[in-house]
Length: 305
Picture 1 (cartoon, rainbow, N blue to C red):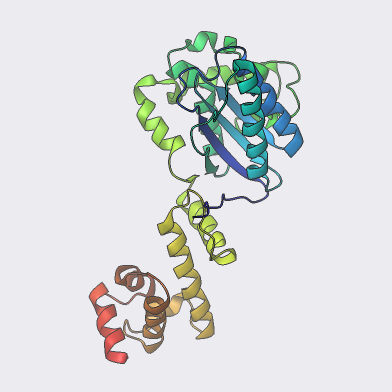
Picture 2: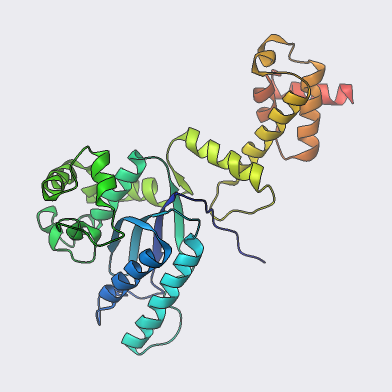
């Protein structure tokens, strides 16, 4: 069975999560954490990525990465395979290094990204590895790198400090540190809630953004089975595109939905097409076409057949 395709497009921003293959301390011995960090920066340079934040924990890592070109799959393949080769050489081992496929969650505009960056930077604090006061000493993270006068190429300090209207400088980072002090993302008691917010699903952002993206995917690639995407969101986007196309064909508009009878012939025609060509349920059809109670949809379709 072929693998599902990842969602890729120019300018996409992702939360990437990957875990070690049944190893408790994948990144803590024989300088393997530093080796992964070097491979990551090489991948950023090779792919032209913008790396907003990263943290390398004992057995997993988090990235907030932006892809100006739709090359997430190629870049991640290079990163993980290159590190696996180097890891096995360092540890004198063989076999798989990572546990299954990495997770890639799409991120919406600005504020969800800022929250994700905070979440990533504060991982060592929530894990009890270090207190917030000494977070700058946790080396395997973008956080201490951002306190340098000029961060390495690929690290994007300007973007997240700009979201907070702070200067891209040491002074700006000191004020960002104060921002982290106020963030609830540091609270270990909220660990489960934060994981649900930032590590689950396929998209982090507003319902409107999610709906628009699903619609775009359904219209441009109707036959693609997307990795991680919410099937319901994609289905509804496909149904919506059919409704809009048929309304244009029948010279109807959104106002017509409210001003014409619930059992109007043109509504029944669209409802019948939806039931024939899609998995749309009566409830969705009734609400979208303003046809009253869901049972009325079945009755109208059958009576007019």
